[in-house]
Length: 260
Image 1 (cartoon, rainbow, N blue to C red):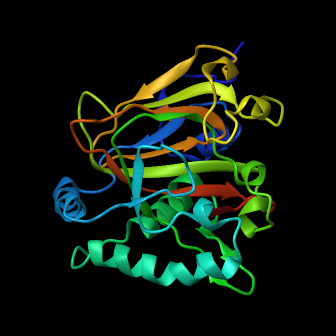
Image 2 (cartoon, helix red, strand yellow):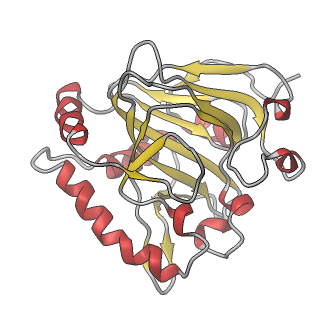
């Protein structure tokens, strides 16, 4: 008996946000969240830019524009927060004269349609986190799960969460590759012991069942899923798969917080 009550992608509603947080549905999809013409402009700008590596991970086929908290989570907090303003400036430049702010659009949509209070995370003494990095996948993002309290030993605001989701808006996508595969197996302290030593991913033996959903990204769509479910990203070696994204954490008071 699996955890999911349905293997379909669902609309953004208060009930479905609660079901997603409780691992009862695989994902939420909002089609055409960003207008296709805007996506085309953003994509053309992104393809001209240089994406940085994730230096803290070995052999992961993903590159970024913006800032990745995981990369600096074990350093002094001033290092990460010292990079936030520049990351925000770069993202603002990507959307120059387009009159949209997708991070705020996601926040407003979750408030209006998902019935949850939501904001960007704040760290006492340092300020607001960055949210909304761009990520480009070429190869295989191997089987893994994301949960800040499990993976980060240093205390941050984001390590006080109980549940973790992510959102992605897709600007470049191929029709026949780059699938997001989400499995109906939840990451736990017990199965964390199976993680490949010194790396970010897990063997497929960690999966409790074969049940999964395969999502082929579509340009302009917003996808929200629970990152504590094991998941992988299949490769796009001959094309481009670029999304804007951040994590979403469930705070103790029931509100949600964003960070990248």
